[in-house]
Image (cartoon, rainbow, N blue to C red; front, side, top):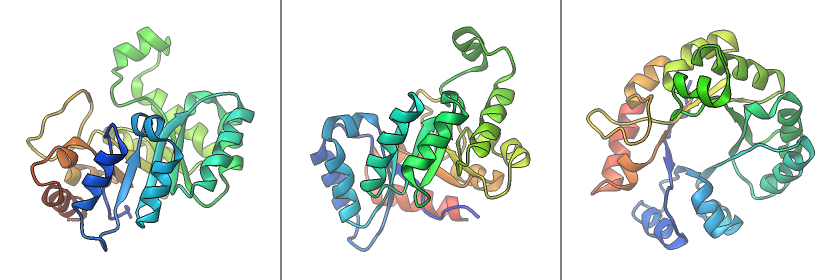
Length: 230
């Protein structure tokens, strides 16, 4: 069963933008939000503490990738912030992923990035010199993440079914690149609607601009929430 709240990507440049956006929602509406690199590097840990103080859940999307010891220490810091979910690059390897799990502890969800949804198979072969298919690469990384004791992966909704088959039903598949029907695709190359992602078995979906740039973000969120939970 998937998490019933779509995750809203808070892709804003500043603290004030986040405050204004969150203030649009009723105080008792507890959201699940994603804080990414731009916002975290601009505002630091305070932004996580602020969002958590309002009672929202936080997916801190920093995609750690470094030597195991460094990643372990960084994860220990993030666990003290009370994040609900965070991630690493699966390309860092099993030892690094295990170290990340150790540093973060067992409470928060820890997932791994396989191949970014902006990466095409051609780019993967050319830039990373990985000469298998994109799906094979994603599957390989997913199995390594499971082996390392992680909760799941970030993946394209197109890959959810094969990943669940290769891992387990409760292995988390978090899918970005979700757009409601008729919305602009932007810079993502592999996209899907909320109802398609739900039907295919995504555990979490991440939605950014279709909510944050909407004329009425609350209405846009409710529509996507409805489509995701239908």
